[in-house]
Length: 407
Image (tube, rainbow, N blue to C red; front, side, top):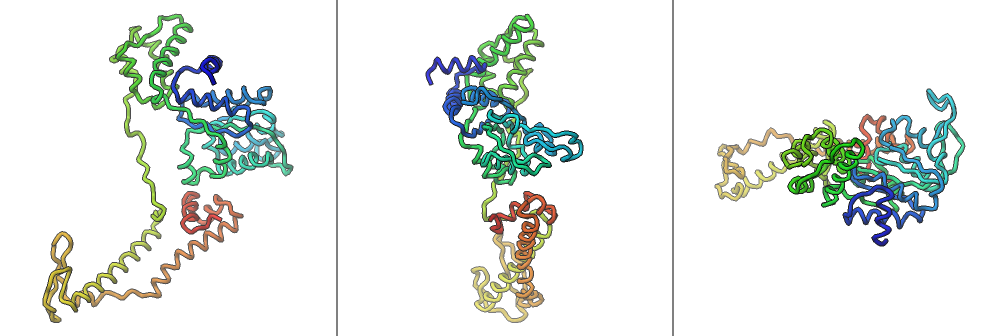
């Protein structure tokens, strides 16, 4: 795409900026528009992801058909299936008449699913079926319906992390992500921040007939260095606020500082990645069993070491004479603090009962069997299985992976 075409697109959709990442996102949207594939647009809140579905639809073969935008995060979980797939009269309390869903009314056109990462797992399964077969069943109906809708989805969620945590289906992610468009955050767009600020300031000036505000050079450098966690949306709010409330029309760093929120460099908790071999314990019973196993193993190993050293006359590398029944032995920790013990010190320590150990170890097998039976009873559906087991769905997902029960 040449520069002239790019500028026409920006002018048509009111896009301001010359950042290379932004230009690349527009170019990808135009290239894949005629190709009837699902598209996933990824980017932080406030970067302007909603512009790209319109670009794709308007330059596709479906441009004469309907376009609908649905904010999945704004629809309650209990009604999202009805909104997307429709429902029959009497399907649930309050369903006083039959209603068509978005997949029905958008047939032949484009459906933009914003915040798709917020969809409940049950709805994700329905959406996957539509993407794979073009078929869906309205809530409360038994008849399968067909639809021909192009899906463009957007999310600000880290999808890989959501998949690991069991919050988003991996198969659905790959269905949606036939083509991916990454919209860069404002903090990575350099001089675009100044251009956008000037645009918002001029719009306020023209709309309310007031002198426009202008950033001096030091203030321009200041907004370029700011992190803009709210991206373009936050920049617009500040420009509009400043246009109305600032007495001076030339904005200095001192004035600008009073409008910019203090940057928080650590606004999120650190995420600690767990190794695959590592186990996390989410209930007291598991912790208790693990402590018991470790304690018994340590006592057994310690008895073995001491008995060997009593025979050899050596304790932790320190040569000693073979003690008599009444003599003492000095055990040394790594901090060289001695502990006095007699040869009979371990006489009262109970031997590890292999049968009891086997019984404790079998608890893991019993838990695995309980999970298998719960999944069988629920037809493989994890949410009802987790409810029967009295654990969270996330815990069940982890245990399924630990025990190799994915299939």
